[in-house]
Image 1 (cartoon, rainbow, N blue to C red):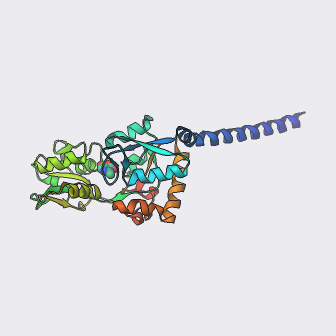
Image 2 (cartoon, protein in one colour):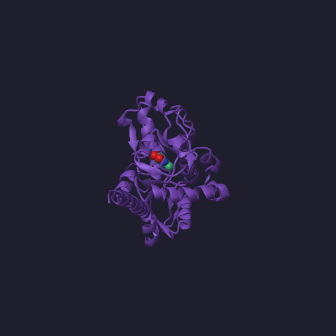
Image 3 (cartoon, helix red, strand yellow):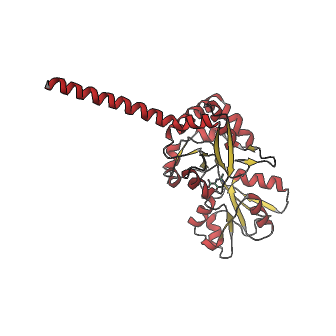
Length: 283
Ligand code: 6CS
């Protein structure tokens, strides 16, 4: 009897393991199944061209949403809808379930990698400073701004440039939180800040559209890293992130990825030359 009891026990354990694996598998796939049923994925964006843009008619474009739209289509999610968020509110919004994914050029850094599940790299860029013509204060780096006791720099709230300026020693009261690109441009033009910092392609886009001969772009900011973003998923949605990465890798291989991002000025080679692992462990 004893032997039979042990066999029954082993069979029971095996059955439990199979059921657990199956349920875990279906639980893992549930987010993607939910998005497919919903018919769209909710993106967090910043409306900072060429990363992300919302036209007057509400049409969403920009390199990040365009890549996401294609990948979700390949995963069976018909469309994407976007909400504009400040960079500093994107991760809390994702964690609170207000968005399904952040596709906004949210650069991968160790502290962010600890809070979200990033895809592999998508958009890479250096940092820039928008200044008055001739760069009257001679800025080349965030340290230069720190050393000039009267200098102020504008940057997105919770954004990378804000953090870089603070870490370079610019006091909190000289790092001005600026809600969007147009505001930053105007504040430099009006002399209310001495510099406005965003990634190079964002600043270049602002300057091109401003058509103002009294502006200069300092790029790259000396001492600031080249960053890359990825699509940022909520911790726990790793199965969706992994499915996203499979399609992203295929698009990188086929050339479709380059066709989407390079017209915006981004380099597919730059994104393909690095990995999430490297970027999330960068010092
Ligand atoms: O990831 C960030 O924090 C930065 N990324 C972009 C595309 N613009 C500004 C922002 O600070």
